[in-house]
Length: 479
Ligand code: ADP
Image 1 (cartoon, rainbow, N blue to C red):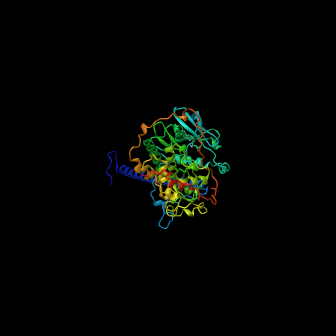
Image 2 (image 1 turned 60 degrees about the vertical axis):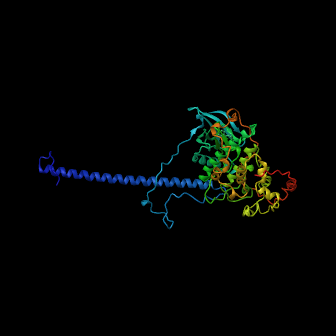
Image 3 (image 1 turned 120 degrees about the vertical axis):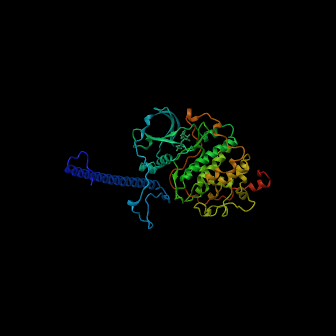
């Protein structure tokens, strides 16, 4: 029995007080029960909203994969499954919850004042601009309708991919997307702009204008930064698919930034079937030219090899006029694929009907395959440097190093050591004052069906070389 209150005058008072206390406790219990139920309901609603968002994301991904692509084989599973594959009882499952970023209307482009055009042409528009409120200088890139299909559906697929991937990336060697802004009439894709960190130069313009080539220590700094950005992308299942010197930006603090993610996409492992019409011709890997249906990160590594060669000589390494001409240049530089060096290459769609020169022992083709042509073309490159370049330019994609392998390569540990970014030379900025000269390089391919090469005869590409080699005119740098 409860002790008697000092305010209770009578026995009755005391009983009433006990009753009231009990009622109060019961009310408290009911209230707690109600609160627990409400919390449970709130959690369920949040889980349902999360599932709906995930569903929407997957649908969007599938839509984006619709070109010739199958959806990536590996998908992140967010719904736990029982052993028999059925969805488990979600009531008993504790879901991890993360703060989900919401959607907010894009700001207007009117928040920026245009300073000058950087690139303007049929292909795209990029301008230097200043944010009115902060005075911060940025690059504004207008989204473009990329092909007939997009014009019909109104879906700027490449633009959407570019936004999605750049939003997901955070790395010092990848250009930073600050926000997406719109002008008044948002029904037109051309009125959507990416606000990017402004970077003073692109590597292509620098290479074209510099009177002397980069020093070995500077080349190493550039390549390390490039490999570091590419390693980040590949680590995050992103293929860039258009690496070339005009898409590499360099600021006045010696920092390189990979730009232009219009061709980039997420892939899985094993990679899905993807369109072969990717990568600007001069930087396009042989497996793509031979019509492979599946490819992976090694296509970007081939482009890195082409960029390495271009940085060394300031001229594009494989400037083919068309697919066949590019393959000819590749074979001349890297040799002819054989069943030993590239098992299975004959099964690639465009390889079946090719006539290739002999690659018997002592033939020029066999010599090229050992890297001798590469060593002769880059006489100033050290043995480690040409070994790295040759491996990046392996015809067999499986023989190319990964970006992470490249970062660990001996070449970067040898003298001269990579130059510190802060010690990098500065260059007069074209983007800062005037429009950049339109580069004399081909553009990334548009969507469509990759042309078949048909029956091409490469058998004569080494003719004349035999004599050259016999006469010693073929200068091999033995290392
Ligand atoms: P496109 O898809 O039209 O080729 P890019 O993203 O490659 O567009 O940009 C075209 C050119 O614009 C680049 O070669 C570079 O000169 C310039 N540019 C792009 N992004 C920036 C940036 N963030 N800062 C400065 N210039 C840039």
